Image 1 (cartoon, rainbow, N blue to C red):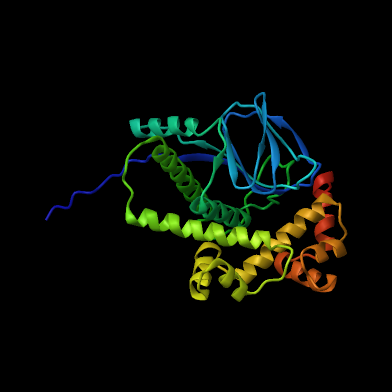
Image 2: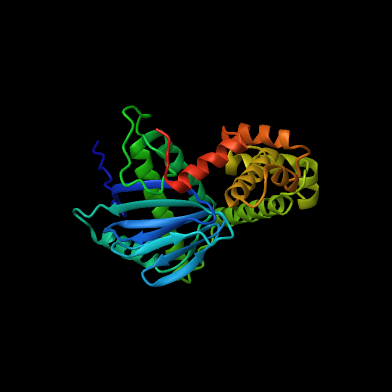
Length: 313
């Protein structure tokens, strides 16, 4: 019996990846700008930042992303108030033997530029996977803003580089699909899509609640009671989204807030600890080290070294 094969068309294909960075900037950081002949996008993971695109300057808030087109001048600086965490990834598209479908996708990628995009939970997870693989693949810091070349480790997990490319392609395809759907007036609303949206709404409700109570100590029972959600449902949701429990995620939010405050340099550790609801600075320091691998003092020194471009060998 003859089995005809299926040769799927490639809608979008990554050629070269030039850089993958996760920056934790101080409130006074400034990058004067550059141009290059490949794509780059900036995603604000925490805080806010001021970015420049050609002659236009605007604010990028947490959860927002911006594409810089090839040969477009771009710069970034902190606003002096909020210490931002940024993901910056630069790449080019594979342009050999382009089909009409590939050309169409490239045009859509250009259509994603010149606008601020808010990414969804699926896209956040894909960015997290890219950063995870990059940490295992590159023999350098991901938070060095002055690094031009990113050398690969001599040994790295099987297929790590390929996974980075695949995750990035999936990330771009997901964005392009959402953009395409946003431009259409079709009514194709499948039940599965409605269910996903409902789950995201619940997730946003919980995460916003945790952020609002970041200066307190709360229990799992309190989270469930105040948000009218069952304990099992809550834990399942957090496990699916972040692979951790609600309380552990809450502690992670606290430490991320502490890191931003340390980089701001306006409060000492005792003030930060008290402001985040910790009963003692000693307990705050232990939890900080458990989640980051560094004490608050070590973290502060590391960020200071980053800002001064004086990295230890």
